[in-house]
Length: 159
Image: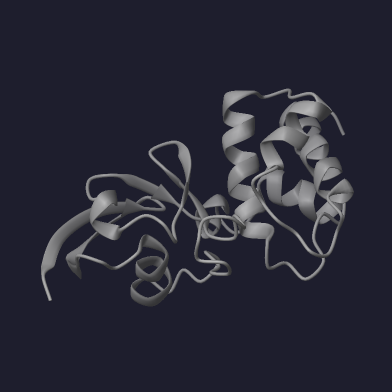
């Protein structure tokens, strides 16, 4: 099996090592780094449970090979928490009950993060469109949409 040396910044920490050529980024994060909030479900890129941020843009970690992330900056759900405090997105999800079982929550949070970085004050229609690539079987999305609106309010200082 062919291995490749990699160097990836994950949640602000430089990670180096040798990985098999076909190791997915999701498996690398989960198995090598114990960052288990990157969930695996469909493993076809459809459900969004494995969504992470790679160089500022969302990516499906189940479809991306670790060697493709070499030299990149990767943020996972675990990287959203600073000093043990919830960020605005996590706070919005918590406050508005935007999660039930929680399985889809990390993928949604990463998608929301990209949305709010690109558009700090999205309309409800823009939120709905942005979240369209993530699947949730519990909430029916209404609470997740409200959570994004809450995160916008928290970021803006309006609560």
